[in-house]
View 1 (spheres, rainbow, N blue to C red):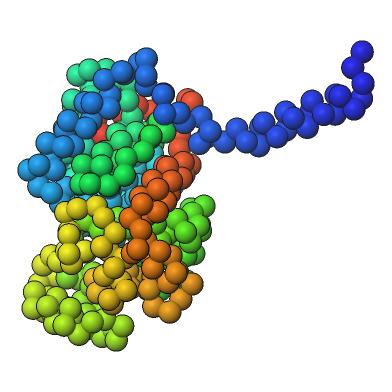
View 2: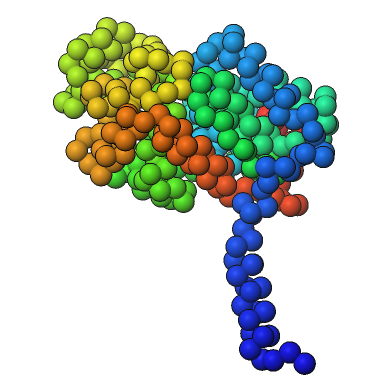
Length: 321
């Protein structure tokens, strides 16, 4: 008969396993290896084609994943369209007239459904497309953990509250990322996503006209296509990375050191605060950025996924089955 101490040890081990057995632990890099062996090549083909047509699309697909994961986890909720009886997240302040790439996600889903119908979630498609976008534009690749299922709900209020706006202070950025289980190191690494893509005038107007921690020549350049009057030129675009806006590299951090961050929230990362040293490190070493960015993307992908029998596998990413 087992001793009381061995029984107690077995119970303790079981408790530890239960505590560790979070939903994210059910995600696996080999999740579809049998059920959809051609998944990765299918997704990358569509992503590369879309980026070849429009380089900016890589940044747009990456941003979709970020805006999805920060709202009740990486569950594909950002993809759901509004209907007469359903309110999605597309009209939230951080998303409206801003997030894009939904047609490309539709194209990926259509291609994936042809090779393995009813198997792969839209949430997982976003995770793979984000990785492929970074890799296609010259950044680090990483092994994507998969096995997420799609939500049957969305939250407009969470989208409005959880995604940090471009006017954020450093403390607000740290807080918003901490709320998602992401560290300050993750924040600075993931902000490197702004080495690609563009932003609208409405997002950086205040920074280029009223902030003082900005290079004057850079501010003047950006002002030429972003009028000071609200409502005038709001949707005019400017590259987030002044130097190489369609290449994933570490120039974003070099820009911050030169006080040439486009958004107020960007420059907050290098403004005499606790993150200055990490920005300097990334500006000097693209290798450390790439490894930290990949690790942070994997960590972000672990935020509250739906697994097992939760959620569903959508047939159309824009609507609940």
